[in-house]
Image (cartoon, rainbow, N blue to C red; front, side, top):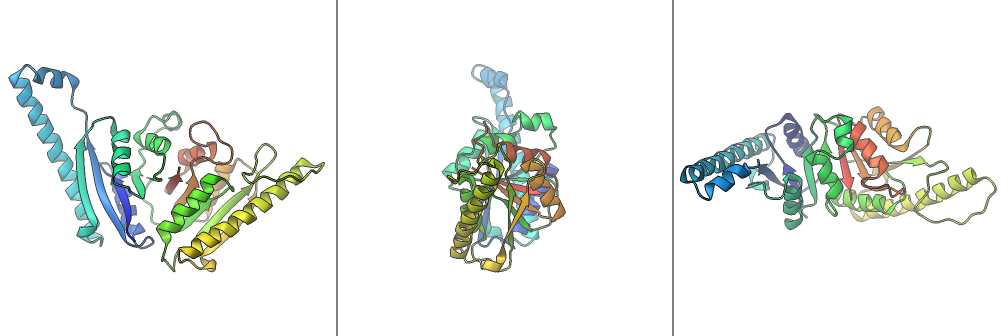
Amino acid sequence: MDRKILLVVDGSIHSTHAVEYAVRLSSVVQDLSYTLFHVQPTISQFLLDEAETNLKAKADLRKVIRKNAEFAQGILEKRKERMAGMGIAAERIEISTQQKVMGIAKDILDRANQGLYDAILVGQRGLSLVQKTVMGSTTANLVEHSKVIPVWVVDGDVTSLKILMAVDGSEASLRAVDHLSFMLGGNENIKVTLFHVTPKIGDYCAINFDEKESDIGQVIAQGSKRCIDLFYAHARHKFKEAGLKEDQIELKVVKRTVNVGKAIVDQARKGDYGTVVIGRRGADTAFFMGSVSRYVLDKVSGRVVWVVP
């Protein structure tokens, strides 16, 4: 079964990193096909208005449109050539460009939804923490507003193909398991680490429990253990259905000593995981992106984060 990736490209180094990760991923994800997609820059509203009544402005507008299209085509051809040179069959690479219509992020999401893509892959620009936090970038807008399609965010030149999946027993984690099992289906070599941070008081597990203990910390620990045990059983079943063996899936549980996002980022770095998979909203139902996924996107470097809606 083909897996379809919408690979957002431009002329930046971030785009280069995304393209190279996409190629390396083909050794992990079978039957990958790609659409390289570029949204052309905005045309000045003044020029658009002037073109309605001014012949010279109309000719200038045509030149700008043609120049943008030629530039976009050049970028796409260069990226396709790079992927083909790294071993991807040319027939598995489609190229597409369009003028900006509703905004870059909205245009990308529309294309992804219309084409029924399995993921959107995009490079992360070098933004400040403040810019990321206020959702000011195209990448952040894609992550926030993609309702169905996972967004894969590449930060830097990622060569490790080790996969760390952060789980908390939430519905978002279940959807992440579904996505990962689909993408990895049929691969007998890859290994996945499911990583769970035991919650403290103030956190909670998405699976209900009704123990009544005087020590609320003990209640939470017991509930968390049952939650993750049930979750792990479900995940193993899903991965088995996808053709992965039990020894390809590892569960790692740690006690929470720092915030959950930091624990995930630290584990990714220490274990040299190139890809971190996480649900956009965890069990805490934070406004906008979940606080954990937002932290991971803000702080991770030299990794790829798969954010599953």
